[in-house]
Image (cartoon, rainbow, N blue to C red; front, side, top):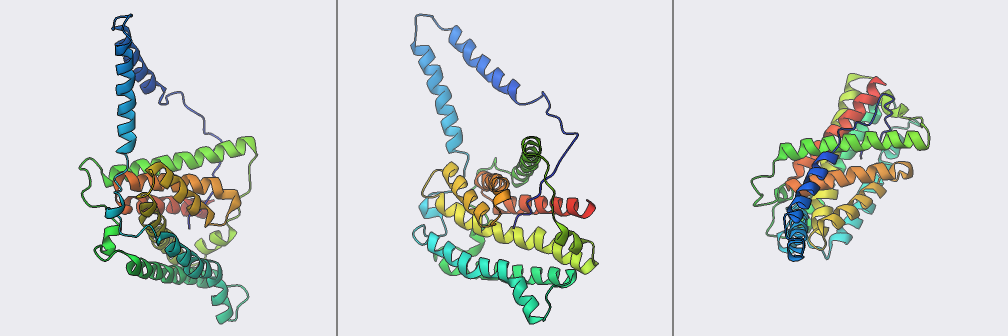
Length: 302
């Protein structure tokens, strides 16, 4: 569960110090190498363009460290049936009916904030345990469960902390930029986080349970299922760009929030890129946790 949140920044102004200079610099280098050649020789221009295209192609191909089919812990043929079983037998019943069941058992029409926070934490823990058991039973026998969190034989230049820092910075920038553009073209929209606000301002126990659920349990659960399982499985059968796109669409759709679909899709793309580049699921879990913590802090002080 990503905490989608529209943030308005009235003092936010676009700066002119963007990435135009590096692109212009690269273009000038290519042009200068062309003009040094004999004007009657087309081979030099063709060679320069070919080398430039090969460099870009090799960069994009080498961006993801996720391996082909033999290196994937899950069978791509049974991937969709496993995902469907999780969604319809575990996720939807617990996430959308769990609190109603608790209220029915306690004979309360409306749960108080502390009971709701503790119930949310318990429900998410049950879903995490169920998801881990499901993945454990559907994995290939030669793989271990901890192998989901990190790809074997990672390149030495892939840093967990660098990927996490770049991913979180990009995520915050995209979310704030999308909120700014939406407010500019469509108009400001009131944010209704009254239930979450009530939990965070009630008791210390409720605040701790809510923080633990949104910043630890839920990020681990969602990254395990949508990046560690789904993204890694489909990346063995298609290009990493396509696999990130597809997994992000599913990740956004499963939140059942039409008004936040685009924002959730962008969040899924950033988390997917982080996992593909680092090969370490802890990176996307950390980014997910920091983002939810930021939204909780904004909700608490607003």
